[in-house]
Image 1 (cartoon, protein in one colour):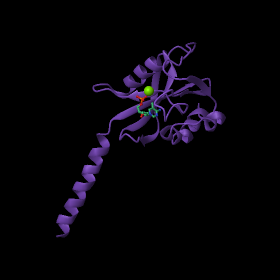
Image 2: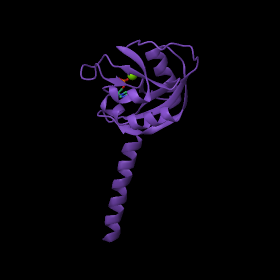
Image 3: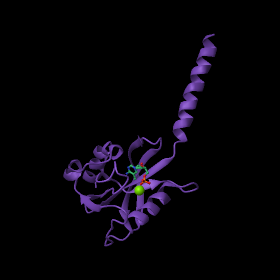
Image 4: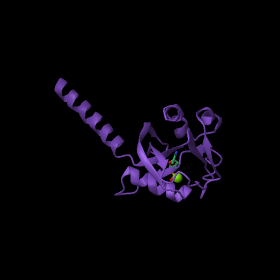
Length: 152
Ligand code: 9L3
Ligand code: MG
């Protein structure tokens, strides 16, 4: 009886672990340049419009995360970035996906990111991080982003 109960528990834990692992990933880019972090203001959907986020989006099938970071930044900002490693923890999104941040730098330090589909792009200092109305998921990461800025 005890072993059966234990086996049921193990199955439950395994199921949970698998459902977590199979969540799709949304990558975000923490682009740092001259001690500032790039933030962008969303223009859609309506509930998110006017709020701030790190650039990024869904990892497509067959794509690895750094590749998705580079593609999304090209689509959203028209600049090439080089991912340098993960930042902070995974943050669960309302839609069941997971937000995972990669630090990145501009491939060309003189390149100027443009708001292709966003309202505005802004370079923020560590002290300005808390001035922005971040999306809920990104808000969770502000502490890690401050560390990233103050350690570089
Ligand atoms: N999302 C949240 N924070 C971010 C990013 C890049 C994305 N920094 C959320 C917003 C959407 C979903 O992930 O619900 C997919 O992102 P996108 O494809 O709309 O950019
Ligand atoms: Mg996006």
